[in-house]
Image (cartoon, rainbow, N blue to C red; front, side):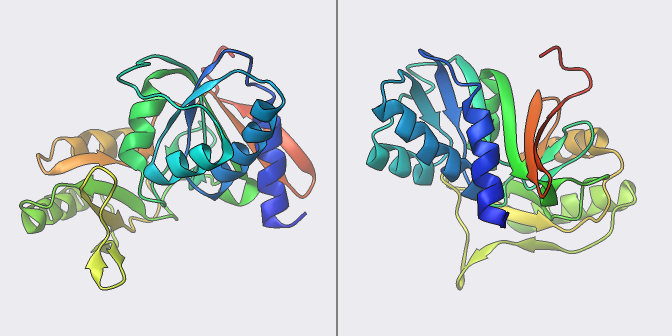
Amino acid sequence: MNTRTRKIEAARIALSHVENGMRLGIGTGSTAEEFVRLLADRVRSGLKVIGVPTSKRTATLCEELGIPLTTLEETPELDLTIDGADEIDPELTLIKGGGGALMREKIVAAASLRMIVIADDTKLVDVLGKFPLPIEVDGFGLAATKLAVEKIAKRLGLKGSIRLRVDGSQPFVTDGGHLLLDASFGRIHDARALSGALLSIPGVIEHGLFLDMASAAVIAGADGVKTVFRPSSTE
């Protein structure tokens, strides 16, 4: 199977967890988009669901395909979120935000009773950090915020570049109107400590470490699709 076929197969298995009447968080990214397309087919066949998209891009695709949408203001509690990930470790701790929607993705996931991650097996890692960690920051005081992130990284023994994400010649702007720092820390041995330290910086809005949020991951590889559960999950 090629990479896209693997993503489709993972999305198909994840879709089997969607039940009639569910309130869904609908993720962002290439794997999540495969799920959206499959979900739309089920909706056209009579499945009744309502979704909260995690980005403007996902919202546009859902609207084009006829998936009913709501907001967290109208529907503040969700049954299930299905989303992709940039990295997944054995504890199902994630790095997300490669597509720039990490803050909204985390808000939606936190509002959900369960989160299922869908990915191909290239996203599995023993230790997080090969993929640069996205950090969503306010534009005000950017240099000071970046310096504070660098100091925290040094204190935690993390090395590597921290760069402002750009879109062409301009800074990349998230749907929330913020900027992104991409931190190439390498191996992150204590994601929990890093998470708390980053959130102590006033200019940091959110970061792409998702701790204790995914209850299961549907992983597609050359040998087929497998579902992995978080060790502490009761699913």
